[in-house]
Length: 438
Ligand SMILES: Cc1cc2nc3c(=O)[nH]c(=O)nc-3n(C[C@H](O)[C@H](O)[C@H](O)COP(=O)(O)OP(=O)(O)OC[C@H]3O[C@@H](n4cnc5c(N)ncnc54)[C@H](O)[C@@H]3O)c2cc1C
Picture 1: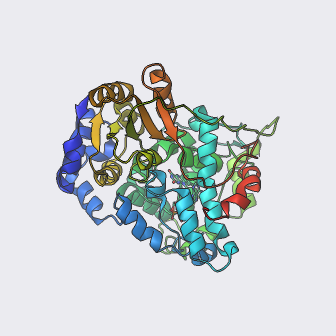
Picture 2: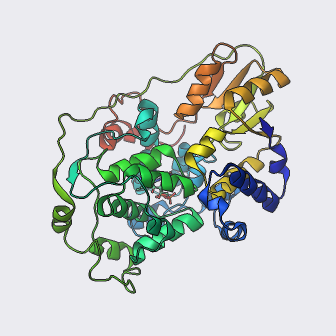
């Protein structure tokens, strides 16, 4: 294990160089092995800064009424809060409360709150079916005509396919780490259904680059687009794209009028699929049992994970004076291959937490060593569906209990018995989700 704490104290440029060197050394990221100067320029110009201060500034600017009217348009009043929500720098309850504060009637915030509900929903599915992050949840809803490939084509990654829209989305994804929801849907749909690339390859590419990269929201959304966790595959046509982009991509597109998404939905569907998929049963997903552990007597060590990268972690909130650490896990670097901009965002969040230690190493080994060094009897962590965190907790259970501390509740999910579809979940929780925190 290696102590990286001094990286948090370094200035932003030095911190990024440390990270770039580390990524190059471990060959884990394509993005970091490129030109550091070009990477760094994009990071400096990014409108997304990690940390609580930037998150709160953005939260103060949300407009739930305009959101409800314009969310689907790429220029609409979306919040762009996802990188902070994903890392627990903001909680869903906090954003819901801020949205309710800004409207006269609660119903005016309903659209935004239901979208927050999607995040909560995917997290619950993740806790219930962690293995389904990389496996089809259901047989495909339609049978594809073409062959499937497990590799991201080079022209897609480079943004040189010749489709102006796809190339713009691809370049913005890799350069900035953020795309509007509709752009994500279009890019994913074109990649899976037109290019025949597996949703897993697309999801892996997004996880590498998105600043809000989240295994649950990302991979289940890819499955939703692919039709392996939905009643039908998601497809779009040029008319739909033009409507929500004001035609900006099609205007000068080299393949305008003869592109892959030309035609009606029926025509596209016939072109892409041979038949409806065979679905013997409706998908039902019982929620996971709550994760619970009793804290033993004594002082804890607070563990900040990728789901709780700030002073907002309920574990740190409960134990503000306890020693706290973050662990950069080499297995995670290897698996998700996070880009430099993504790691910089994460480290900006961490740098704002006073007195935090940062270690590179295998989590169970680091926690054991640091708990012994500071005389901690147990570890406190913000509740998370992350299977890696839960596996570490299981491994340490006999010698160093890991105690989860819950987030402020977003909704009352006690009546949810089936997470097979968002509508079934939302039906049970929407009433409580629309109430402000007491
Ligand atoms: C293929 C694909 C991949 C995606 N990957 C991710 C991902 O890795 N991480 C991620 O946070 N979101 C992901 N999303 C969901 C959604 O696109 C983003 O959360 C949203 O675009 C972020 O922008 P925003 O903060 O302005 O959202 P807003 O529209 O302002 O919504 C506010 C918040 O609600 C939540 N939210 C909104 N829509 C969704 C949704 N459909 N699913 C889950 N949460 C939602 C987010 O936390 C978001 O920040 C993905 C969607 C698709 C189609």
